[in-house]
Amino acid sequence: MQSENVSNLTARLPPANLLGYIVGLFLLLFSVVCNASVTLSKEDKLKAAYLLNFTQFIEWPVVGENQSLSSIRICVEESAEFISFLSDMAKGPRFKKREPKVESLIWDTASRCDLMYLTSLKNVDLVDLTNVVIVVNSRDTYFPGATIVFYEDEKKLRFEIDLNCVYSLEVNFSSQLLKLAKIRK
Image (cartoon, rainbow, N blue to C red):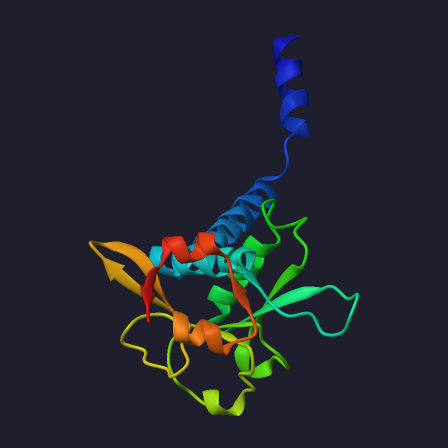
């Protein structure tokens, strides 16, 4: 009786090559997921979170009366991994129901940016920067008109805001955001 139960059990098990295939597929998928998250540094992930959160504390002008801003475009010069991470965060539960929606795009393919994140100065002069809040990744990346600059202080990521740049744009910065930043005049 017991030997009959064992043979019924082994008859229901998948063949060894199918089981090996399933395990191999699982390992391959697991390594791809792990590799995607490993390629971005903790600092880059934190900067992506900051960029997304900045959109909650900056108000952009609306074109025309009785219209609402349908989306905020964050244009990024960074890698595809950075854009993918930023897009995934924007689709997450915290921002999913948020209006306006946040889109992340490669900056040189975007027709109009609301917030632009720069890590270098490659061909930036080809993009219309009217009322674009420009964020640079460090004080080492100098860009005239940079509104927000990331910097490190005591091993913590911080940001500073240039008030002269803010005043030159047709955007409103929340006082809450200004309280968190180092202010540059």
